[in-house]
Length: 291
Ligand code: GUN
Image (spheres, rainbow, N blue to C red):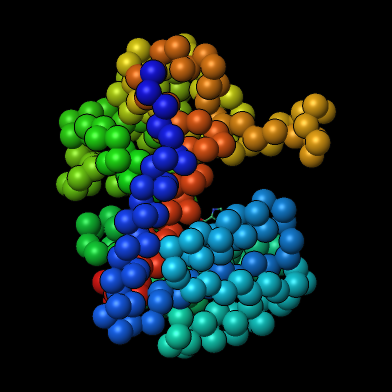
């Protein structure tokens, strides 16, 4: 089994992005600038956003972290979004999800200028993605495509089964794998909680992408021998032996599936790192005005 190593792959892409940033700045441009808006102090969100800020520094980009209180009104958050839309010193920004319950995520997403929507969540950008037009690809699916490319994994004509239909991973992933693009050109099955006989569907997969948010959900008996398995899950499971009281585990039973799959991503150290690199790639694209 070949480990699809997010650390190695992310490092390779980051080196390339850092060089491109250097060239961009050497031509007289200011460094690409990404802002991340964090509402409240959800520990997972804090960790993600801090990681994103650190990544920017590593590749020579500028980053701004905008921390807002969890009781901010929707109106005030929308005012902040409008300010960021108008800020000419900023190439792109993200509003970290989930947002507190009193704020409507759809309204906030719609308020972001599609040209600065480096998450690729705005409906205009989702539509452009589906039509294979230039746009920002959502970071997690984009990172998975970069991983497949890095390991030269053939996708043309393969059967790809995506488990989970979320707006930020499963649904866009299914669209991207089916597009006439490279990587892409796969035959795709998008499965979800209402799928009948999920095991039979999964067993048909040459490429199985698990994005359901349930620890160890995909077991060895659901994987065709030789399949490529991509684990998008980041689940906390109680673990008294760890100082913080939990450990992170994916949607795939790593030990069992590693005996069956040809390629497998670890958690942590797999897709999560690629998500962050994809956001850097999108920010560079934003700075160059390529969307
Ligand atoms: N929460 C979990 N993943 C993401 C992401 O890719 N972008 C944003 N904005 N929030 C998230």
